[in-house]
Length: 235
Ligand SMILES: Nc1ncnc2c1ncn2[C@@H]1O[C@H](COP(=O)(O)OP(=O)(O)OP(=O)(O)O)[C@@H](O)[C@H]1O
Ligand SMILES: [Mg+2]
Image (cartoon, rainbow, N blue to C red):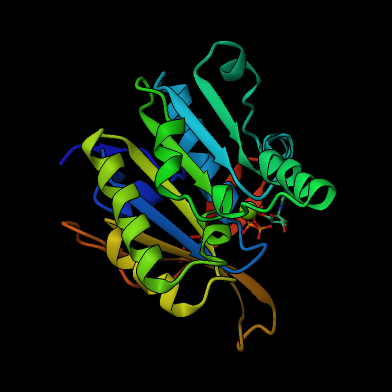
């Protein structure tokens, strides 16, 4: 199976050479645990290799994602200018929509809130790599069955188009929703911040929960965020 770089030094070797090409990976994690930086590292690498990429931002202004990426050593300016990177601003659409609801009483909040499958229509035919940050927002007013149907359709749609995708889901979603999403996808990573009882300090951890068709280590890896991005710590 062909692999693509994760953009994190040391991670590729630990998961059989990189993310499986044309498959979907899910990143789970609590707030501030570096989900976005992990996802963006993959897109930055794809852009460097000249593969057309798309970031779908559902919960944050794309400008903020880009600015934070700059601060950890990943610049996207050139890629945006060259048309290698495209950005879909769902967050802004949602906030505009919320204003409409408040001002005119128009309430078809289903339109953006419950349409995971609709994200496929936003991915143009030439796109190779996609980051969706974050799908957690879509689960808020969806039944587990509906979420399962939608996430399955999204993953099948992406896979049929041979798109390598990273989906981010924050842990505001309940554990049942996390499990549903985890079954659908080809691989799952988790980022977290934990107390180390031995040192008394807080540390960042990255776990590989599953990658189909791949030998993985289940040992959590410590990492730091530096001006060069995510750096895995040597054991
Ligand atoms: N330049 C930097 N140097 C060191 N650490 C940084 C830098 N920029 C951001 N961070 C750290 O990274 C964390 C945020 O990472 P990121 O946005 O990827 O997390 P997230 O899990 O996506 O968070 P959210 O729940 O807000 O989506 C910040 O809380 C901060 O601690
Ligand atoms: Mg984030």
